[in-house]
Length: 345
Image (cartoon, rainbow, N blue to C red; front, side, top):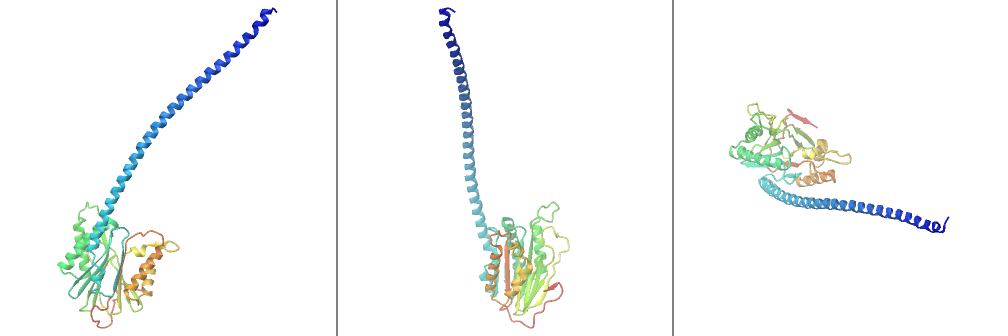
């Protein structure tokens, strides 16, 4: 080997190493550029997504504010509707001028109610009724306005006082007002109700009911006056069909009390086992407190339901009315309730 060859070999190896390094640098640069490109496009994509999300957030916020405004407007309208509905209800204090020993427990499920009560007096005759319209809230409230208007016309203008006749005329009025006499009518709206007429001159009590019965307490006995099993209005009856409601007619004394109610109180779920309050508990509650003044009975009925519900939701409107038929006129003889259509307990 010559001296020239010995000294020329190392530079060749050095050149080989520099090529590898250069290739690695080039590859690294390519990878960095690719990574930067990926990150750039990812950044742009994220920026577009964030931009869309920001726009969606603004739209959602705008829709939320719009919903809040609409909800406030609707709530204000319903609250005003309640003022109108409350104005058609005869104040309990006014009814007590003529029926001093009575109470009304009235608690709508929503702001407005499908339950309502109605009272009128003409000479010696008092007409009082508890009514449960189809549905609750706004739909029930609309129907209650129709019912109030028709009752005013039937009782106060036409002077019809016999309960079965009032219900029959009310049925006809509702079916005509809601066009339920038409075959293509789509509304099932109607009313379940109990209606009583008290004639203080004759010491006479009459009752008729559409699905809603009443309880009559005399001494330590509670009797049920059964209503007919169809509503006023709706599709259960039509104009042209034979409309008949059973009318109970009997003499009362100062120890006679009546209780009228919708099904909301009885159907409310609660208690330890989350079951319905039911009619049996209600009868026992009435009998246990029958000797108390009516305002105290109202307080007990109210507190009993509050404890029964607990932290649960009220599922329907509540309406319970109690009237002790004393102070309305002199009693003559012992009150008699006919055995027909009456269930004893």
